[in-house]
Length: 436
Ligand code: GDP
Ligand code: GDP
Image 1: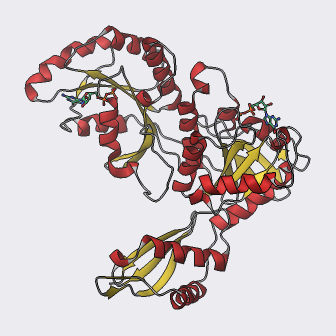
Image 2 (image 1 turned 45 degrees about the horizontal axis):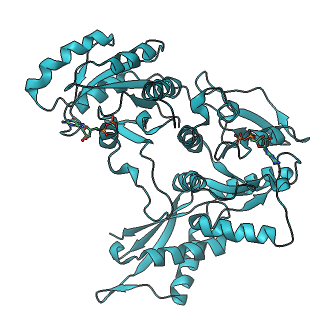
């Protein structure tokens, strides 16, 4: 499902991040048990009435060293590039400023809908102030108050009304969608080229809707694949495209549309904080994950190097203990041919369904081996478990008291399920429910 994207632009201090947080609500921290994942309050999902969308706070994309006006200009350009609807935010307490007029000038260039919001209109008396904002040329200003939560409903009504009809890309059920994510210069686009250049690989015309004509389609034998957002990986023109925050934003959008995510690391540089963040998003999104260590040709190696790398990766990406690791080189093509078969396996595991009867045997054996936890004299009872979803495999465990299900016991059950069924490369989810 491709959701429409809303971007908030405006000069600093008008209240962009306040509004972003209001719209995103509690969604921002979905999984608390992902150590090492600090969240950028930059890109998240929101919902208004029955409509889901993604939202970007362009104020969170700092272009380092750029002067104030240049920052705002580039943020506005990112909004134009990435969004379906733009919220142009201003400050009712300060009136129209030069910086607002500059933002307006950039936004005139887009045909995308721009909704003008005047923030910090904290009480009805202040509504008089909004009339000046007609001069910006974006029609009716919407008075809102981020701190008091006023006017957001009307603003979002207008935003949602402007959503375009998004044509779904139709890649077919059996097509495996994957993306390559990672910091700039780890070798993503080199790796895409290496993959597309493989002998067995037949590359079709780049398909997609007008909106997402950015993917590459390839076929190997009977199998179809789509590399999500190839264009985003290859394009390196504008200044902001090399900034890390922008690359994270692109990565998040690619992750969302993928079944399997290749987290690409650079063997020469080792693991950076940014790598962990990006990998954390793939894990949280419930996608199949493969860790790819690229530029394997560029480092000095001995018989221990691979093992040391593996230990280091496992240490830094604890929550990704299920992800296979591939050491390769986009330049020499070493092991590039192993990538598609691994993607196949991970994709199969990501959509694997297990039989209920076998699942319950595994759970009962697990309980026999390691008794359920107790709390305040009550013992957790597990009645039965069932798989409720795939992509990722999701299990509901019916119990007497979900509160007594301890995180570590959940983790134990998860490991037992993994040992019994495989599931290499895919996160699995366990949900405890009270049996009614
Ligand atoms: P950003 O730089 O555009 O992301 O702005 P922030 O969201 O960080 O807000 C800047 C300042 O304005 C903060 O001190 C907020 O508490 C304050 N602020 C945000 N919304 C409102 C509002 O509706 N009314 C008032 N009075 N202050 C607000
Ligand atoms: P991206 O920004 O992640 O798409 O990275 P690029 O594919 O543009 O690669 C960045 C730089 O790393 C380029 O100079 C590539 O030639 C180089 N590079 C990419 N893959 C490899 C590799 O496997 N080995 C070596 N030695 N260099 C590589």
